[in-house]
Image (tube, rainbow, N blue to C red; front, side):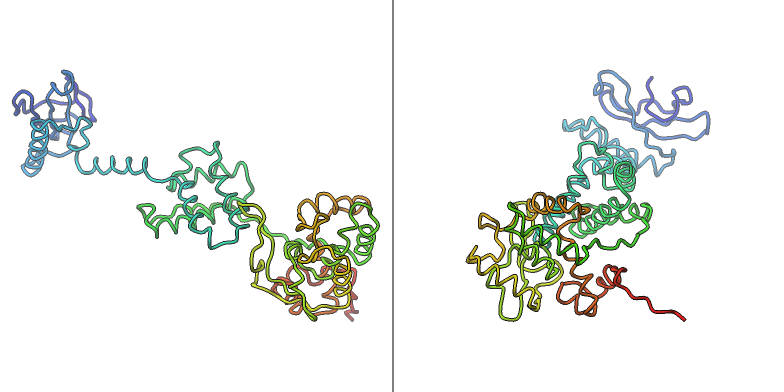
Length: 408
């Protein structure tokens, strides 16, 4: 006889035989030779299982109260048999504890994975962040989660899943990168709990991110060009037969410290007698490059026009290159920042045998040299940085210009 209990067949002695008629379920009491305890189980009709014996072990001691419970289970089974709706998986008839375990398994199978939740999360956040942030941050992290090599169980929203995901990512990416991703997953899970997207209030990514070793931050001084190097760069642009068109654009970058993304979309409407008004920038989006209102860290700012900047603007105006853009490309369109960097800028620096630095370093160059004359809070105002940022990243970075007083 097959016994569907946790103990072996020989450890059981059947005390009560058929209490059922043929074709229906009945109650049996079995005794374990190991413990001597009598246990209740339900014997199911063989006709439902191709002649094989099948049981439901209730895990209950033989007591009058438990027998009443068992009889109710049997009545439910026999009623289902009569009505042709018997559950052959037996999940409907198992004790509540086992049913809860089964439900938990089903929920785990049907629960959304973290990559699915994150995709929903970033769609909700899409209109709340810059298109550039959505493209280069949100979609970047989503692609990392959707990598076909990520183990499926590592995407389960559970403590085990979060740890497995971290273990997998730790073998491929830096601690800093993983910390940034898990910060995103933590925020995603908080959103999912609040939105009812997952049926739990437990956030496994909050704890998992604390397992990532802290990365020691080193102060990295900004790369900048000396005043002599700036002069050589501008002279090389002006004399270059292919890239002289960009000379005033480059001069304006060095003269204002503005971000390239803010300069390429400047129009003549942004200029008055006293100021350059920065209020928009070019950003990358899923639809390509677009002009976005507002700057990186502020809505707008004004840059006072000095004689150097005025000379550059007058020179551009006299060329009549565009009725709208101040610094158009040779074809009259907006300068493509990456193409300019890869071709014109890289070529000029190579000819000068300068160590390569991005065009964005024109900003660091302006801030570094202007700090010799203006206070950090004033430099921050005209460049769009907080004074704390200026002090932390730029102040005194030009060590060659410092005059150290005698200490005694």
